[in-house]
Amino acid sequence: MASAEVEELRPLEESFDSHEEAELHVTSSSRSLRSAAPAALAALLLVSLAAAASLRHAGSPLTLQTGSEFMQKSIGPTNESDVLPFHKWLIAWHVTPGKLTDEIYKAYSQHPQFLKDDAALTNLVRWQIAHDCPKQELSTEMQTQASFLTIDNVQAAADCQKACTENSGNCGAWTWGAAEGVTGLSHRCFMKRLQWGEQPQRSTNHQVISGLPCNPDAHGIWWADNKSQLFQLPSPAAPKVAPTPPPVPCHNGDESKCVNEGCCAPVRFADNATCKSGFKPARVSGTCQGNGAKTYNDGKFLCCPHPSNPKPSHTSLFCVALFLAYSSEQELLVNSFNRKASLFQCDHHAVYSSQVLELTPGLVSRRISSSMKAEVGGQWVTVLNLGIFLALYRQLIIDGDYLNFDWTVKVDPDTVWFPQRLRSSLVKYSWGVGGDGIYLNNCPDGLHGPIEVFSKAAFRALGLKTSTCNAKLNGPRCIEHCEGVWNQLEICNGDCIDWWGEDLWVDQCLMRFSDARRALAKDLLQEAHCHPPGWMKTDWESCKYKEIVAFHPFKDVGGFNKCLDNALADEHNASVRE
Image 1 (cartoon, rainbow, N blue to C red):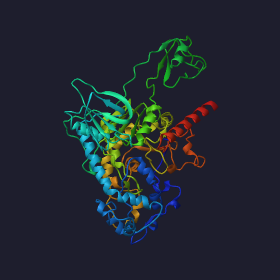
Image 2: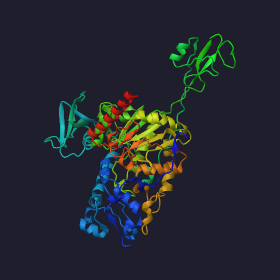
Image 3: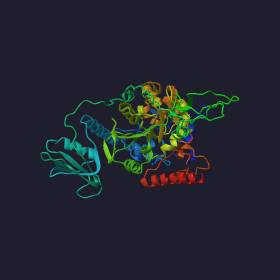
Image 4: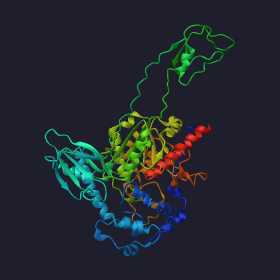
């Protein structure tokens, strides 16, 4: 265990550098939140709402609550008529305006619309799963001999696919106008009729999305009808035992052949033969002699693998990304796919979403049972994405790919990272892959979500422990004298789904309620909220640090590619210097 650093979780409020930037003061009739927990408040308010919204989700019951009045009220109104005007909201909630006041009010005021959007999208995704909807093909136009019907004001390609399915007697294919601001195309659903024996012809058109109808007959599906069901994951299968490799034939007498083909030959005049890792010599005749030095006096020997070798490297990678359908995250994934970068350099990869999309030929997403809608709020005013990632983990367990690889890596699409650098780093953690495995903490303040690395056994342990962790970490919801809820990580204030993000919950779950080992990997992630060292603090975004595995965030293709190119150039220059 000396080869890797195992550490304890530090309070998350220490993960922000400039506490004086927080200017929003939220008070109750009893005392101010700032006086109750100044460090926690600073962390709470410094979280980037803009970054949170751009991740995947908009929305907003922000649980900025302390004292009896705050805890007894619900910040998220369910009806638009219940939304207070800004000036009345300030008074009712005892808010002194500051930098984030407008963002928080926006979140509060949009909650009724969020509820409507989430309900509509949930119904759509459930319908798609029940009807086995095939992939939606981006940048593809379906051409047939005859059209059937055109519908205006269709909000998404999935809605067009559903409309085609509901007219499946006449609609054999569909095309939806994805480009914005194009007269006669944008948000229009073009249903195509197929003649007897006809197959739709595909052509490239970057302004549309197309596909085939779903199965008109529905079947039963799994869907979480309440929060607790999200934690009831399928029992993960036992890890597969690697088959014993076939015996490697020995080479008789030809020392150069043994060396060149990776076997080993005895080193004469040495007490022990020196072999390449994983191999040993095997003498077939002659005796050892000579002043304690073992020699092969007649030169007859075999070069064979050591019985317990070749040793596995424990560095094979299964890499996963979850993305928001129809968003800029698609562009980042397609860019990485085309450049053979990021997760597309792993031994195996998969991308997941609420929609089955062919992003580009050869890259099709898998569906999770979630609308992927989430709100901003909780202890740190971050995206409350725990429920979404539990749906992802459910699907990963069902699909089972992770069982074939040593490590599972979950990455965000806007993370620039280098699998080969990770592989080199993972060698030193091979001591922890047994039992409940090992996972890597990527930041001194606790696990951050842009890149999460689990050994096979650790990911299985997470699947086995979710129900236990839900029971242990959910706490009573405080309604008065609640100043202390802001600066502790023992339990959630109510349901964790409404209090913590996925990264914090997973970290607490594995660290406290499993036997998985937790190792601090200081070279795994660099981002502003992860305390770049002084010599890197001003230019970590240049990505010119070959010892760092991942950099985050780069939310547009231009910035992503600049980081990627800088990092690759730095690697090249370093290799030339060496």
